[in-house]
Length: 283
Length: 65
Image (cartoon, rainbow over all chains, first blue to last red; front, side, top):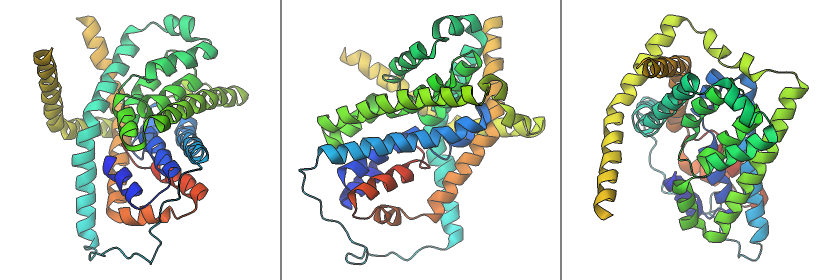
């Protein structure tokens, strides 16, 4: 994500556009939307990207509004500043490198976190009693702020947050509170916040967090209203997408996915261990 | 021990439910990477401040990570 943001800044995009991009990129992606459809329900798979778009737009417009005094940055106008156009490689080459990027680089980055998310989901399904979620988080007015507090420090990407949110919904968490976690979880954590601070400064970081907090609470409340108005049960709808797929295909896909993530799992664990020993040595 | 087996079984079910959709999502990400040029995307933002915010928000939605 860092190179894409740097590219935007270099091209002279307004600060608001950069902030906007830094909100919507981590909150959803073409990988997390199908997974939301699979583990949650079609409505959530639609609401999630729309909510991310609204949150990003709000943060970006606020940023531009509050930084009105700033000189408009020179724009690379189309045509006036022709980029040195490298000859486009043939389609087959581009497809090959694109798929390599997706299934090796991207899946290598996201996959291990996704598997951790899957394990946490398994832990919640097996160990958390339904009554506990209903007793403590049955009231959405309480559940949404609680999910927000959990989300803020948690290091979780959009794809990995989905199984966790789905498992909590199956235990009785309201879909709105789940959406709060899906929006705020990936967008606000130590890594993304330090990147926003480094690129945009403290003030914009405060605004970034404020926009995410306010939007996710409002959109979460709106989501609960939609489910209630249409009398939809997120528990009954959850996972219906997977029922369309034959058992054997599911099994093969799970094994293939696991096999593709496994090589980066080794690297993932060794990075974590190196960081841990480094930390222990320094302290 | 049975607890651990329960957790692993539940996790495996979640993995089975999502694996096809995960592979599909990453396939789309690969197509996007192959067919869309990054410099075109950034140029698409344009000079209008408000419109560039809306477009940047829109572009960010499908991009993974």
